[in-house]
Image 1 (cartoon, rainbow, N blue to C red):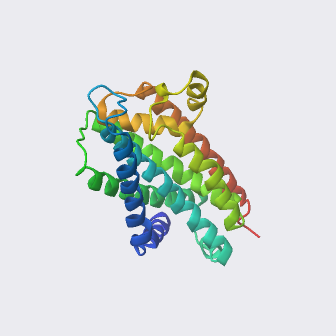
Image 2: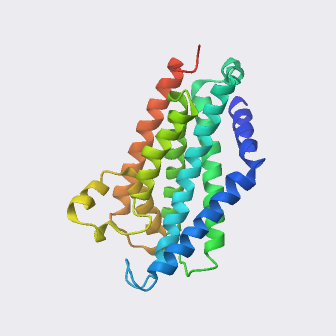
Length: 250
């Protein structure tokens, strides 16, 4: 019951301002598609028989899922800490595990809603196929969960909005943009290709794209193992911090 109440509260928080939390990110992704599609269509082909705009769409969908999942949990926590109303959640009969998973589940919901919106609108512009839909679903869920957990972590350790903004601008955004959303890592020089393999966001994008085309830069099972391990590590860190009350209890 405690989990459901907090989850519902977080769900309603972003749904009540859906123009900002859902419609705006969908529009941003459409602009990416129009700009990059117009510039690079016909000049670049990553997978045989796949147009560049078709290659681009899964990356944009997953990028939207990741960024919005992170934004939901991180912004909610930092706002609650700044306004002081987080004390009412901490005083409620809710375990730290329920606290964590409620925020993560709501973050996943927002990320997946935005991702579905991007996919629905872009599908009308490009030819898409789902070669392995289960793989796409698994990576969408794990990716949203991982970024939701990272959002909780960032929200817990941050005390000011500018600290959270630094986390997003210097960690989340670069890792997302350099994860292969707009390109295949095989087009990179060897040094940067190896650097990309150290980026967990690359495995989420690559695995999700495999679900559409049945082709990827890395075996999907490898990507799945990396993403699952990253989620387990971040979730464990979050649960330990929440249990200790780090920067939550005064």
